[in-house]
Length: 115
Length: 113
Image (cartoon, rainbow over all chains, first blue to last red; front, top):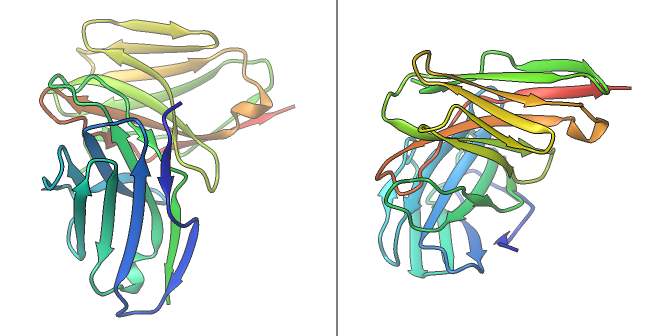
């Protein structure tokens, strides 16, 4: 079974803090993604990575950065947390497919609250 | 601007009846469509997918229909069971997209006894 593990289920951080969300997958997938889920908006892509040290902006990258130093690990960084970054964060991975025809496997999510 | 739209935020259905969830998309470059199911405080789990070269895909109680000319797909669940109560997300991707998915806003399904 594919397993995508996020380091925390729940986090509470203060405004202005630097926040790290970690994600590890065990299926040797090339692609990894960070989404956030908000009511009425579905899942929106923040950043993705198709290879080690490679990263591409998604639809809402502002206020975030990412790091992928190893194939199995993809980190999301909130440089200076703000209250509008309170959300459910979901990491996902998928195998490489030039035709895009592959499902993504998700972690259990991190509920981040910024106070 | 959402490229994948689920216009029904919620759906209530009786146990044993059919659930029909709808999804529309605007990007004609999408060629692969997926449905995910999500319980509260959990990550989405993959349910079923369909390639644009097909118009129907079936897996047990779940069937997805694709109408490319209308840019519309639907998920049929029959018979509906209480464990099907969850949020369902429609998603789409295009060729050479590195597996990036565009999601709809989701439909909350409640299956009543």
